Length: 70
Image (cartoon, rainbow, N blue to C red; front, side, top):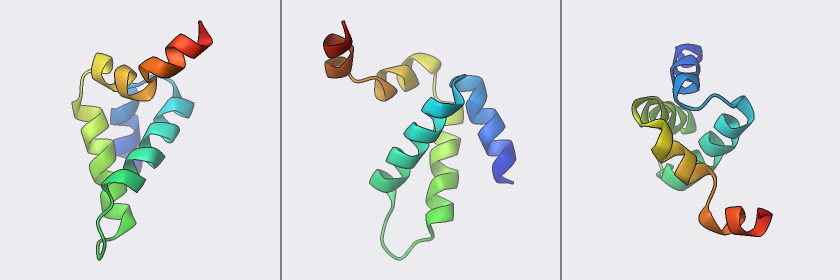
């Protein structure tokens, strides 16, 4: 069930807003033609849940945005 996948992903990335942003961007990038978007979204949530928090934070906040904000 997708809600279980979302809760697993929240253990990696605590901010729900950032999780939604990352999942939507990743779904657009990883989606292959002739496949269901739901399947791609599930795969993305699985990848987020299985990754380390440091890796996800680096993907969510690119270096350029950090420099611009400082």
